[in-house]
Length: 316
Ligand SMILES: Cc1cc2nc3c(=O)[nH]c(=O)nc-3n(C[C@H](O)[C@H](O)[C@H](O)COP(=O)(O)O)c2cc1C
Ligand SMILES: CC(C)CC(=O)C(=O)O
Image 1: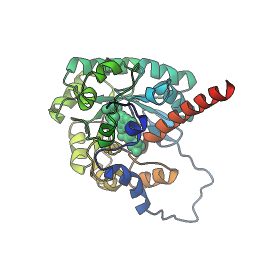
Image 2 (image 1 turned 60 degrees about the vertical axis):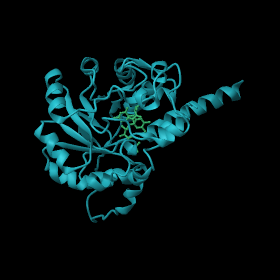
Image 3 (image 1 turned 135 degrees about the horizontal axis):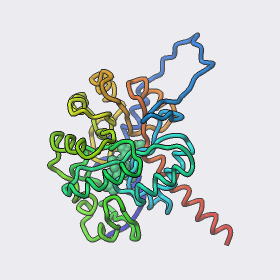
């Protein structure tokens, strides 16, 4: 049986959902120890990222299929990020093109975007994504390094999740109908290169773009060191929101060791389970420069859709 139950796709993690839950709950292990008699009359949450001040240290992670949550999908996300004064990641699985997404946000206010990329078997297509992103004005590539194969997503398998008909994926040059012609896992990940490596990916990327190169999906000090050795500009400490390899640790728990390994030589950002201002505070206190958030933004889009359907039915 095939279905398009959106919550199976948006909300779930891989296999037994261990990591997705720990990402959030682990924040509760950490307590805040305040110092007193400090002058807090003039404080700011702004930080500088990609040569621009953002209002607070939280940006929106790249997430695919936003057109399933609302017809405006990534266009609405881009507008919202611009309004909030933060930056946005564009998924390779976006339902609008990077050009449209950047234009939508820029109409509202200043905003920077980064382009999320997979290591692909089709190098020419991968290069096309990079060139389009750079020409459109993206500041960085987020190379998602944790997805040589798709996570084992029982919750999607159970109801035969397939993307709904009528959605386009202009960056990977596909449509939902083409994805539907394949099995669940092949449809979503057959183009990912399972044989990717630092040596193959990073120098090649450097040779084709002047954008910053970040590695998304790092969880160990060893891989922080590799990113430094390969001249990367930043890493996102991420387990893909628990959607790839289940039973990896919560990102907040590995952050201190990763930040220590970095020794200020590379930028350290984090995502996964961040749901409140105190979570952001803890992540910054433990060594991150900035946080990124995925699902809450998707829930916001879905609520907008629900509200507009409700409004239409009330009016009629
Ligand atoms: C529905 C959904 C789709 C996602 N799609 C992508 C993607 O296309 N590329 C990617 O690198 N990460 C993707 N992610 C992972 C996010 O970039 C991010 O790492 C994760 O959502 C952070 O965890 P959080 O949702 O708990 O905030 C996706 C996450 C979700 C929930
Ligand atoms: C497989 C893609 C559609 C994106 C995704 O679900 C993810 O990266 O987690």
